[in-house]
Each structure stands twice: as structure tokens, then as C-alpha cells.
Image (cartoon, rainbow, N blue to C red; front, side):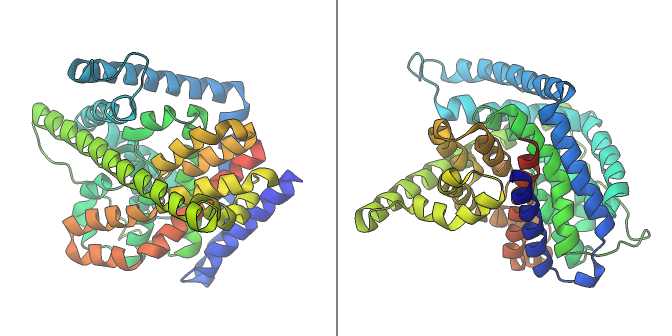
Length: 392
């Protein structure tokens, strides 16, 4: 029965993307089928094989060690603020982002990351039927982040047509940056974080290929990566400050969103006798059902999903940790995979703002298709969750 529901879920997701398509006759079905098969194969490899579990353990161990190193710096500056045995979210989850950001900067400076991004991007372009630029951008978004990735493409940004710009932005919203992966792993199981990272990469192309199909002329598919010339210590200072900005921004958003959600929940509870999150849970319950969540848990799951969409994934992950004991392991895995992406309303502003900072004209273009962008990125998250439901 679970497989039938998952198959129905895939059909519904692809159908919704088809309804939103701007060129239904131009959809290439073969790459889409191939990428769905790749998603299933990678999910099975990572979640159901010893080799996959070894890979995930290795990645998790690396991030655990990196977080330990990061905590050395945090403890030096903030040691004594927290009471013994306490684990403040800002100190233990957000501030380590600074150290991860520094490592990304070093790998960028040494030309290791650009080499990896170009190589993987070229390989993916052979599978997805899209251009080298789109494939590079998807991998780069995963490595450096949804706003920073456009800096590497600023030479070409001014000349990109609307349809290619949509795909670049969709990839950026459908993935998450490596700098905050460690933070996610402190709240949800690393195996689901790693699995989501991999299959979201292909999911972004699947949904974009339906909503926004086009063919790239090989003459137009020129990949020019902008690399700023800096000294090593200039780079270190820049990435330290970038990491700190991310930590502060996420922290500020959490304070605002968590407080707002608590206030709204309380008002709804007083007036209607039901919390706002429960109402959202009922609205998103059908989607949770199509993702393979058991019927008795779809309202709780729907509430978490809605929270992620209207606030961000951090708020949703915090809420998930509060109710995880009341969910089955299968539901927990499916919801966890759904949460690992930047698909939320605030990302529209982040991405359009990042593009606008480099090209005002293109930034306005992104803002105009912002809701369609969020719709597509949300479908990517739902599709990834459904793919994992086949395996769990």
C-alpha cells in the first residue's frame, strides 16, 4: 500500500508542475525519468546499504569533528555564559557556522571547490539535458549558498534570459549550503541531511524541466566563473564575517519567527480553541499523506511542513525535535528530508536581493516570478520526501 501512495504522490507532484509549466510541449521526459531513477538508487544506496551508511557515518564524523573545533573558538569567546549542562542554540548550533564558512573560503581560495563544482556540474549536465551553467550553478549553490553563488556568475548574470534565470534561482532555493549542514545535523539525523542534499540536486532539475523547459544552444552555454583576486588573509577575514552574518541573521530570524508563531498560536487558541499550527497541519495533511506519512500522524507532520514554508527550516526543525517522540521512525525520516531546503517565503527576498545587488534589472525579474519559484522549490522538497518514502 505504501508504494501505491508514493507512486500517487509522484504523479500528483509532477502533475502540479505540469499545470504550472510555461511550455508543456517542450518538456523532455527521458531525462526526468532517468533522474527519478537516480534519486531512488541514491536514496537506497545511502539509507539501505552498508556502503551508504559508511559514507554517511564518514560525513557525519567529519562534521562532528568540525563542530568540535568550532566549539573551541566559541568556548574561548563565550565560555562561562552558559550554565553547566546547558546547550544554548546560538552558541552550539549557529556560531559554528563561522568556522565552516572559513573552511569553504580556504577550499575556494585553493581552487579545490571550483574544480569540484565544475567537474560535478559537467557530469550532471550530461544527465539532465540542461546547460553546463545550470548544472554548475546547482552544485555551486550546494557548496557556497543560495545568495553567494550568483557572485561567481556575475559576468553572465546581465545576459541571461528569464527562463535560464528561473532555473538558476530554483536550484539555489531547492538546496542548502554546506556552511549550515553541520547545524542541521545537530537537530535531525545526519543520514537524512546527506540524502536530502543529494536527491534535492536532481529534484531541482526534474521540477524545473517541467515548469520551465527549454533547450540551451551550445554556443550560448559558456561558463565563466568570476573569481575575485584576494590575499589569503583578506579571504579569511571576508569568510569569517560572512559566516558571522549568516549566524546573526539566522538567529535574528529565529527570535522573530518563533516569538511570532508563539503569539499567533496563543491568539488562535484563545479565540478558536485550536492553535494556528494545528490549522496549518490540517491544510497540509493531504500533502503529508501523499508523502507516505501514516494517517494518524499527517496533521502533526503537516504542521511542521507549513511552519517551514511560512518561517524557515530552522524553526521547523526545532518544532520537530519537540514532537519527534510521538512520530514513527518512518515519518521522522520523511519529514526530515522535506525540511532540508531553503524553500520558504523569506528565500524569495534573499535570492531576489542577491541578484538585484549584482543586476537591478535581473533582480526585478526574479522578484516577479518569486511565487512560482517558491512553488517549484516546495514541489522539489515534497518529491524528495516521496522518493525517500519508497526506501524507508
